Length: 342
Ligand code: NAD
Image (cartoon, rainbow, N blue to C red; front, top):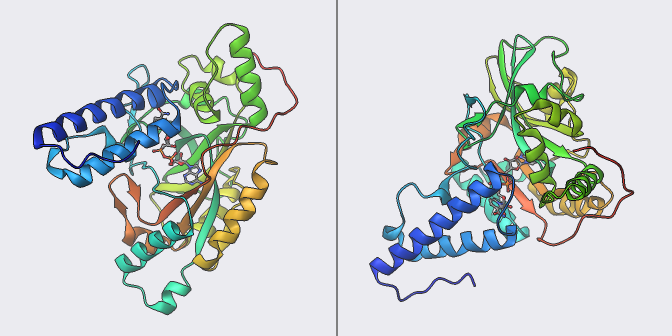
């Protein structure tokens, strides 16, 4: 039940919001720090909705520093910590065309675009990979560090684990900037996810709730030899920080990532206007079951990097991108079984 009670006094509203905030904090830790959610995503999302509805009714009763506004969770102290040069944030969600249009309208209003400029506003649409985001630092073209998102400001140093990846370029091809942070997603294919869970269960361990938790649990290992046995994959999809001038568009940047040697999702597509978003969403939805990895929606990013910069961030998400999510349901397609050693 997501509706917020309208008849609470200030003390009751405060008590209820504090209770919900504590629960959200606890579920965040289970999910992001231990890769073992205590509740389903649907239950978690409903809890957040209830929290947001209560805050809308009783804004003054919201606890200070609420975990509801946080990105991820505090980095696990078992890992070295590293501060991102540019914060790693979350994404706002939309679930239909109307909500998507509201996202466009907000961005257009913020930028003060004319009708013609709005019609010509280009996007890059990318499948939203169900994995965990990673920041990859290269100095003079050499891979020096890999960091999880953590709480968005500081992440966990998982360099040794990433060095076990076949897909990760240790050296960038061609000219490279002095310092660059590249962002991407680490994920497990559907078949490896199923195989890993079968192996976990065979030795009496709890299976992972979804490919994302499995990928996170496999990367965030203190012994990199365990990560080495997990066939993790990677797609690069964004720039965090760059000491040199960047290409002027996200699409050109994706080409640059490819040229440097990164795997970039071949389904990513430049859309000349927002009007193409729904058709692309449906196309990806149809392709979804046949993909070797799990996706939970499509991410739309304004292509012009200058506009992205002008739009910036609001709270825990950028104003220039949005995740159009599939409705929550669908089990993973059954695939041929393969062997994996935990
Ligand atoms: P999110 O996963 O919905 O979106 C942000 C992330 O999308 C980015 O950090 C990045 O890792 C990823 N991404 C994948 N492909 C991308 C692409 N092409 N471009 C850019 N980013 C891409 O947001 P979130 O805040 O990280 O997590 C929220 C989700 O986690 C919700 O679905 C929620 O249900 C779930 N959650 C569940 C629990 C639980 O207890 N069950 C707890 C916390 C969070």
